[in-house]
Image 1 (cartoon, rainbow, N blue to C red):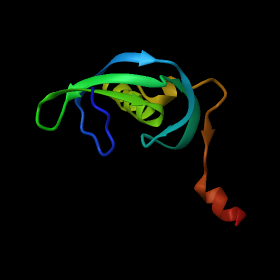
Image 2 (cartoon, one colour):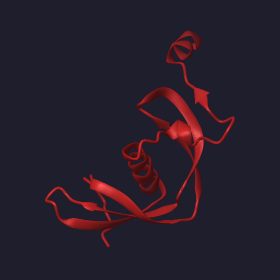
Image 3 (cartoon, helix red, strand yellow):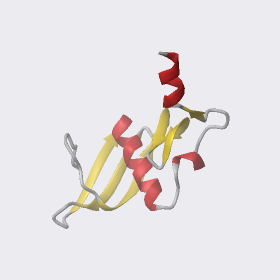
Image 4 (cartoon, rainbow, N blue to C red):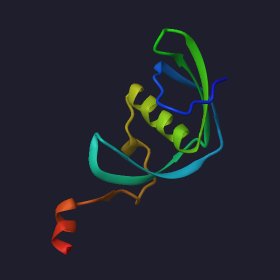
Length: 101
């Protein structure tokens, strides 16, 4: 199993194992300026092909596990607002922040 330290390309990734839970703050470029709390796996094992078409298996923890889970959700037709903890969705308005200064 590979531990990654730099940029990673995953082709047709699928999560084969999840461990633990972490409550995280999350947003998405598909929903600008919106953020919420979500429960994600603390650790995942993902199988995919690398950029050369070679099968790889990667173990990810913490923020990396969150990112992989988020992106695999997109491939499965899910977005972060489908998983938010009720009552935690917040919208950040940059224009209002400018007025405060």
